[in-house]
Image (tube, rainbow, N blue to C red; front, side, top):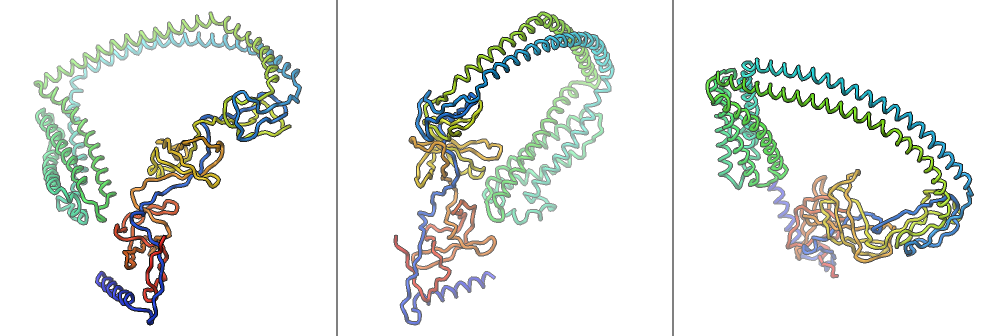
Length: 582
């Protein structure tokens, strides 16, 4: 197949050369003008476009504090105002002073009712606290019984120390089985990567020649580790699981620890050789990353197993190597005695804690009784506060002039003259005119290509303004979007407006306009290159699309120009290539 393609290329080249050297029916060839993009300019700056709203450092929505009708609006949208400057006047068309007074009287009635409810609630609280005192006293009695039972249990533990001491031998069987499971997992994975034994030689035949290409010595060392580990596994599997011999347990635990340490060396070596492997189409980066992830996972599992067996090894060495079996039993009994002493101390602590609980419940009961009159007095003050609310209502109705709370720009006036308003009705928004900024939101992929302190372009009403990216959020919001804040270099009168923001993205690959790339099939594309004399079709590997541009992962040549003109109808027998001048 390759020979056939080469033959066709040679024939095609020969035909093109004949066409280049000759004329079309003896007539002069016409110029075929093309546009080109030099390699020096192919790394163009790419932007992504996002909408954003311009805002100041502080936006305040001013609301009406009274019910009435808008009498006049003294300012227009985008007017500059100073603090305390009149913006909206409200006319009192409700005339409900009597109603406000009645509401205040109703509040007094409610406060009186609340006073009675407070009294009832306090009486109930006293009953609850009294009940709590009874419960605490009952807990004290129960604690005494419980501590007696704990002491009895400690005594039983002491008497059964000899039986419990057998657990150290039973645990040896568990450690052995766990070690064999860890061993089999590591050997299976590493042998499948390293192709050491006959069982795994066919599992990785297409990858093995490229794996660890630049580090043959380390690769050989890793294989030697695998062979050593197979031998150690055989020795571990032959250990007697049901032994009562201290020497067997001590030597067996040492053998398991030796295997774990050797396995640790193997996995550390694998991380080195994976790093030194060559990346090819057969062994892509994603496969190497998977190998590395798998090795890290095995290291994590190995560390857990090592920690467990080390703790058991310390126990074995502390107990089984100190003397005879009778000495070990005496040590266990001593530990049981310590447990009994601790149970005795804990019993005293428990009784003391419950006694403190009884005392606390008694104090709460006495305190609540003393504070009962104070709480009722506080409820009585609510009646006075209701009367003050009446005066507050009158003062609010006197405040019919709405002023700007800060220096800034008025925008988004939300009412009209003679419009009915109520307390809390939004009237207008005022924004401080210092430190103006705009915020846009990008997804996770886009965020990875955006950097702080870059210059963004703001397009508004046909004008282009350059701002600086102040910050890029590292935490996504509930919509999995990241906020990008851009600050003005100078004050502009865009507060509250929506503008189009062009964010620069920093790409690791070259980009070309979309219309330059031509599809061959579903996953194949090509571009036309110009070497100064003739056209050449070049297959390319594409990345992701950025608006009107697309990444070119491979296929560009530094010494050839990219043709941006449609050359599908170019006939070398009729035309002669000419590059358009700027």
